[in-house]
Image (cartoon, rainbow over all chains, first blue to last red):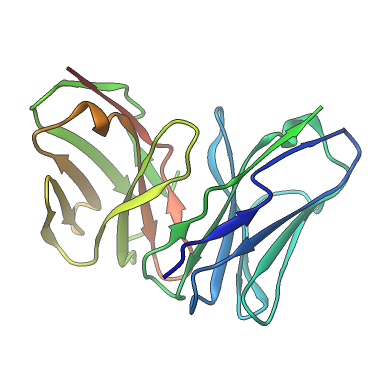
Length: 112
Length: 109
């Protein structure tokens, strides 16, 4: 099976702009989670989607949003970018429930 | 209290030695436990999963789970320089994955 894919892999944006990141899960996986990883904060949970519904949400401001499509692909949007949003954004998929979760390669976002 | 706690390290071991990584968790209802390896600049890679008390072995890796003590560990036998990475412990009580901050491991040739 193909793994989790994320696009784009690298992105440079300016403060105040918005950005959309995309994630395609492993075939058959219905759950997609998004994480932000920075050197100082480690892996921070953003939200999880399951069958097009947001099931869990982390402690991030409303500028961070996401959605999931009927084919389980997911997008994450960050509006009004701030310098502190510079990070590696990781998407992970799992079949649902308590089973293994697999990560994509990540999107490295730099905000200048 | 954090859901998952790990020693941040760094942990240094000589090549060929056993590396021992530890993790504690707070939710007694946790059912699933995972170890991920993350190389610098890369995404986490799943290396072990364990669901029941006891030991689970996969090659040079052994995961140990003690639900009564809320403790999970990872042993790496015959450590190699290529094992140098950050190891993340993850726990799933059934509804969400919780990650520790990771332990940095360096294997010295």
